Length: 375
Image 1 (tube, helix red, strand yellow):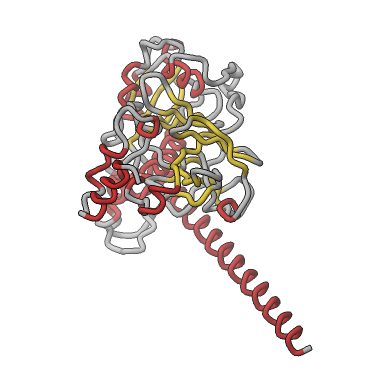
Image 2 (cartoon, rainbow, N blue to C red):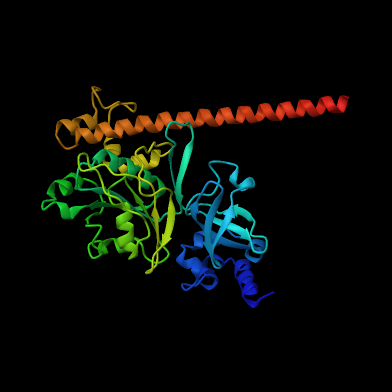
């Protein structure tokens, strides 16, 4: 047994395992650069420290996933129990444990954060990415700018517990940006940065979000310049780019699948396809945090089930009448609340149907075995 492993086990027995992170994974190791943190280190058992190796999921394809670790990049086939549950199977950003010799996936480590959405036209959740530290909500200084969409993204980010920043791209196409800054000034503690994504000097203020070992996600619709921004932050052409339609400022999907990219100065960047639909479910806390001003007012309403329309003693309605609260913002809050409730109920019903079907199959198999035994 190596001296390093013995020292790690002794530290574990002393209850100092959490504090020994820097001894196990130093700042110079590939794992640290890939975002390995004490949160993940503390999940490993003594046997796993010896027999397994952690790797980060960099990209997910239909039949295989790309992972990266101390040995570099490799491919893992998508098969086995780990990949059978749609909600539990690995997604981009996850950490997997692989057996050192066989390279067989053993398990997925618990996530520090998870981004997901209701799959368009389906009754299930689609995983977007895991273990993200910071998020750039990217929109552009043109017809794409939409406060309701920004609030939707912000609710998702708040639920995951990540640090957020709104990035306004294509700032070079306009000489006056006051209307965009004015529209966003009411959002508490939400940084706003205007950039020309083609100019690397212009994106320098964003480098604080992608320091060594930090994982940064870019969220936004197609054509806002996410891939261009990624390339400028990375200092190289990592992602393909394309133009937008001038008549409606809409873009084309240039990113075909979600993938993590490492950048020379440290940090990882997640590039993902533009999402025209971002259905929300099970994000009650994130929604309350994104609309914290309205949520606080709602607690002051006379009735606990106040719909904030014509009820007497409604604090939200009073703030709107006094022009202290934007009516559009309240309408969007109510709309998202209804959507979250509806989608959460749909998920609950879908899970109940799955459990009922599983019980039916189990009962049928049990009856079949009983008949065979009688025969």
